[in-house]
Length: 177
Image (cartoon, rainbow, N blue to C red):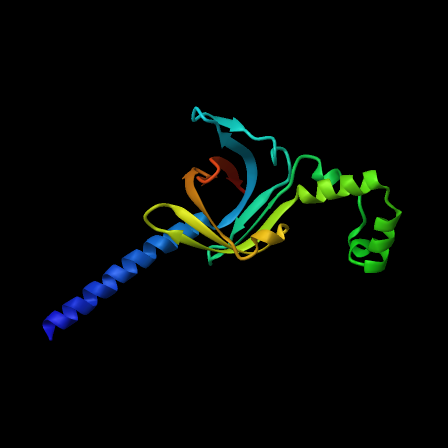
């Protein structure tokens, strides 16, 4: 009986410690961050600035409960003149706007809108490898709905660094207060 009780207590203690570690990482990751830079690693191992996303208004949010969202927009995206919110959500007005646009204007609109990268996901953390897995629910790119991506994460003070090891891309995010 004593052995069973000791085993039960040891199991509960071990479980509490392992859950505490993941809970701590979730608390550390939880927050809203603004994109500072996107870098790609070249064939010599040097990190170089990527043009995409730098200078835009881009954010990532982790809620600490397993949900996240990210939006990356290029510099100047907010200057794109389109319709106000009410008109953009009115199918009749939207269709009239699109029908009145020239081919050049339509190409510019498609280019601008496709540069806006957004997805919402559920996420999990790996305690031992500092890997966050995003299980994407929806995105501005329909072909990635339901897909999963892994990002190595680390912190330097209030700076979150996410690395995509598949394409050697590093995103640096600054915590917002």
